[in-house]
Each structure stands twice: as structure tokens, then as C-alpha cells.
Image 1 (cartoon, rainbow, N blue to C red):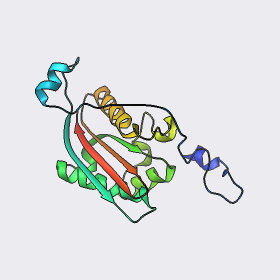
Image 2 (spheres, helix red, strand yellow):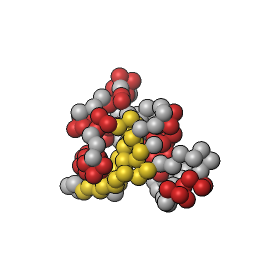
Image 3 (spheres, rainbow, N blue to C red):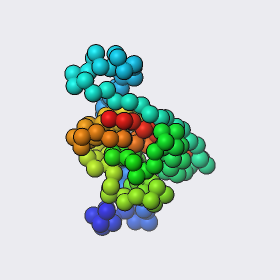
Image 4 (cartoon, rainbow, N blue to C red):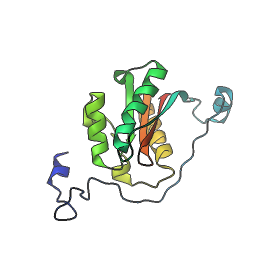
Length: 167
């Protein structure tokens, strides 16, 4: 965070820096949603991931960073969990302010999530961004021995979606 604060804005009167917004990137990703039996048959590791909940939210146009919070809170509520029950949090953050806002509203440390990178680091390939971050969250949870994963991401200027998984 301190390093980002030292970056100068792109324009003399601006606020956007090369560290506060994602860069375009190429990529693709896919996730398979199926029955537990099918997942066990197809999995090399035999450890299927359970989708516990999914939620969406919409806020005032132009404030997409705000939409992630109600989406995450709804997904957590539907899963019967609180933010403290989550082992891994991944967010789509096209702007650094998204994570700062999310951390403040969810009452967590901004450095406690997106541990292995995020859209700000790897870029934003549009379509597969959410799937890639969900896959990264699953892998991080596996490395930690399992637990719950929360992915939350904004989209289209005023919407967001969130999922809670059990690994």
C-alpha cells in the first residue's frame, strides 16, 4: 500500500496511477459445475469443491466498487457464514479503491486477501476474470489444507456477484 501511495498520477491533475487500475490482458478460464459423484469421478485429486452460495447486487450507476459489499454479504448470509469464517478471499479489483472500500466495509485488513495476486497484478482479461480468481482461491485454500473461499467481483458499472465455496 505504501508503494502505491508514492506513484504519481498519469495526468497532472489526475488521481489514477499505473498502480491503481488494471491493465488489459489476454486469458481464458473455465469451471465445471456438476454433481458430487461426477466431480469425484473426474477429479484427479478426489476432492470436489462445494458451491455453498451465490449472490448478486446492484447499486447506483457508476459506483461498481460499492456493489461488491452487498453481494459478498448476501453470499455469506446464504451460506450461514461470517467474514471471519473465510480462509481465502479473492476479489476482482479493477481499481485499487475497490479493495480499500471492501476492506473498510467488511471490517477486515486490506492486506488479508488477494494474497497470491489479483486483477491489479495479473491484468483484467474481461470474461474469464472471475473464473480465474475463483480457481486461484480454490488452489490457495487447498494449499492451506481447505476451508471456505469467498470470491466477490464487480461488473458493468453498477453490479457485482459473489460466491462462497467449501474446499
